Image (cartoon, rainbow, N blue to C red):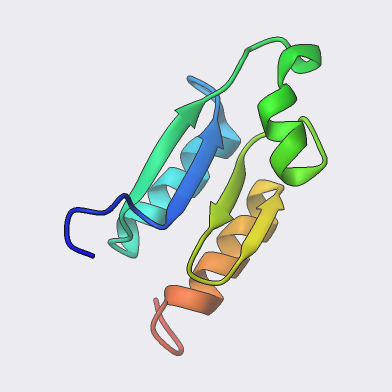
Length: 89
């Protein structure tokens, strides 16, 4: 499956501090991901609602594990637990 898209998709907003926190962790863990920027208007974020059940960002979909989740703290914890080194930094 060479040349395939990254298994992690991050739904995010431009200049969103919570989204940037997730981006920082993805980069620290050297995880390939694709960004999907969503509508700034909360009421128009239907694509996020379809995948996560909520309109809040950040949200991720991880094809490797079948996990879909939102809330930056939960995502960071999940990424570190799933992909981080045991007892990492």
